[in-house]
Image 1 (cartoon, rainbow, N blue to C red):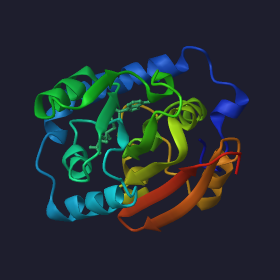
Image 2: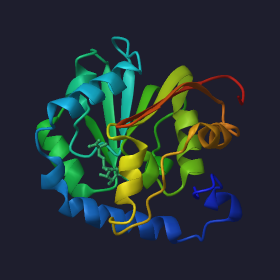
Image 3: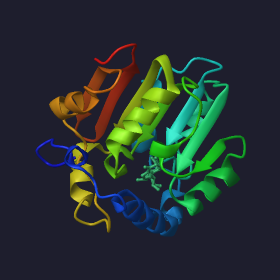
Image 4: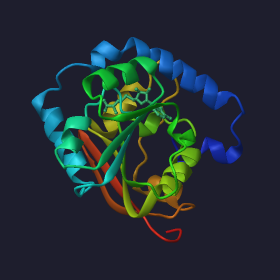
Length: 217
Ligand SMILES: C[S@@+](CC[C@H](N)C(=O)[O-])C[C@H]1O[C@@H](n2cnc3c(N)ncnc32)[C@H](O)[C@@H]1O
């Protein structure tokens, strides 16, 4: 996604570009595992709690955590008694750490755009602090729409908000998109069977709840 809300994919992404950027990210996050594997400050935990609450997880549901890192959301998700927690990650080191902390989680190495779970097999998908990192957002949204059941929820969030992401874009050694403002997100979702149900863009907290519906919204 560009600054103006345009979408680089609409103009055709070079075949190897996604793989190349994903590899850069995997290397970067492999090296950052100890930074992420730390106790979060209370104000961040409160915001993560709010984010997980927004998904209204019901007991027995299947929940996917995209770009799960070391699994910061996992204890918050587990408290809602889901039937199954699935994680997917580009970084082997992040995934290894997540597996060591949470062996009960089904962990997949790879891009969410390629995750081969069956159709309609998920109730909830979290994309926490990862949406700007996803290179092919169309492929990722399309695959999540396929894997989510009707009435399922996709939560796109960041516990430090849009301005934080804006600030780190200059610093990280890979391309990072801004978090989309409301009209941009609505436009991105237009070609999918998703409806933007709830959007919160505060200083220090970003949460968008997207519902899987029958037809394009
Ligand atoms: C900023 S970290 C956030 C980790 C975790 N969600 C958290 O809140 O602590 C972003 C993570 O997303 C992963 N990631 C980036 N693009 C991804 C993609 N397309 N599919 C799966 N994981 C991805 C990266 O490897 C990285 O570990």
